Length: 441
Image 1: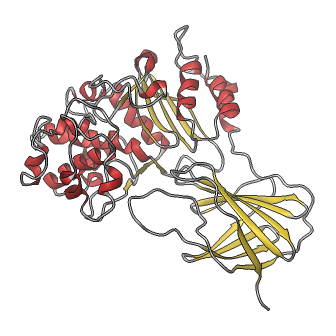
Image 2: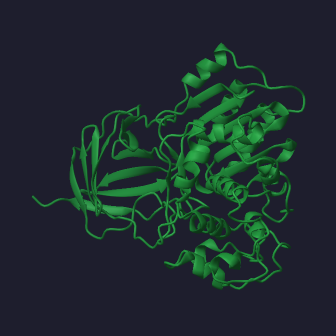
Image 3: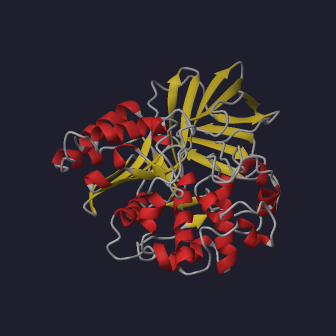
């Protein structure tokens, strides 16, 4: 099994990976990024953030600030179910029957809302994936230390592992969200996995890596996907083949493979996370033999990685111009955040050779659209071309995360109809068409 076979299979079957770093024996043996994505740009981790929050808890426990069997209510003036322990937050066995994140993030006091929710089951007896529980872990650590998670982890984890700037989304109270919202580079994710595989420098508290990643609770009802039913640790998932992982929505992975003495970090924008893991087991971790050392052909394949750019045909039959939307509708990648902020709306769109300009309520956004190639400018990359005599298609990839939006613009009867779709989303991936007419004058 080899890196190249994994890349070939991913190119055929996954839409789409953004970056990969493979460590073997603690050394980088393969690293590559699908253009226009780059290794120096932090990528949003979504629920992979949970494993970092778990690590913060490990440090706080080792420093005597808290205990795994402490009642959660202890840290909130006795408020909340007295049966619920810190351990239950870590293992997603709080006794709730649904994820608490949606209801608690509807207001400004997330911790208070969590503590006031009914606890339907005996804590410790029922697993349910619960991002609100991870937020509570983050809230406890931040209350005890008086510091944000990113600040608390900086000297203990981020600096020893050579992390650059780390960002984390915050709740209305100013606390890092814990269960989601962290951003880091793919190479940094790999180094994080390595310290959980072999902590030769003693960065983590003694015994924490083994405790956090071992089978703690059964989760056979967590879903239909095989690798989501192998048991759960302390904010880490167990996997087949003796592996374990942290993961986040749309293909953000830190996969630790003890059998192979290997760690694989992946960032992506895919809806088929189980499909990605299936390829990892088939091509990088296999019962029939060890990981094949990468060779020159593997390196060449890593250097050619790229997402498809829009390739148009002959120039369209429509000249450029500015079109205005008479009845604006929301139109941008759905970027799930725990808030009620209304997404911006397209107000006008201008077409010029090689350039599309969108005006929405957040400002003016210029997208250079070169047929057959990606143009990168700041946090986004774009590509576009005439895909029919009266159809112009352009695509925008937001390089700090998984979202890629495609716009199909159909010109007819003096107007343009813009239909937008997203590659992945927590909600719908397609949106109602927007009709725009030529600007007056």
